[in-house]
Amino acid sequence: IDPAVAIPMELNKAEIKGGKYAAFKIKNSLQSAIQVLNFFYDLWLPENGYKIADIYGFEVFSESPDSKSYQEIEREIYVPIEPA
Image (cartoon, rainbow, N blue to C red; front, side, top):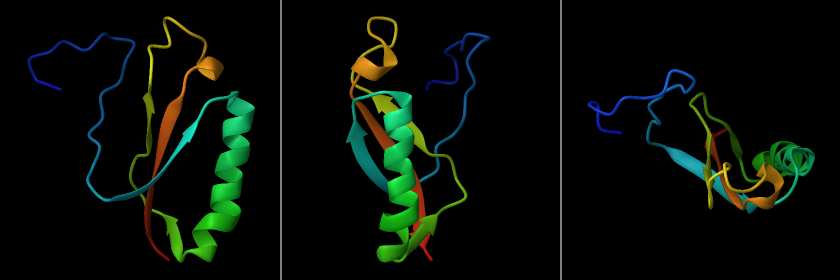
């Protein structure tokens, strides 16, 4: 984001550091997303020799949450990883 752009008070600004991320798409409820993340954490990470890195993860929305509910929007979830 251009430093000259004003960020609304209700939003936070954070720098996303470079690194390796595991990414997956999901379109469903928050509970469904949590189930996917649990599977990822409990099975995928250890089976592939990774752990979650100590940097921010993030989501990318296909549409604005102003126009559709969270569960109707396709999202890409990026989880920072590093070798275990």
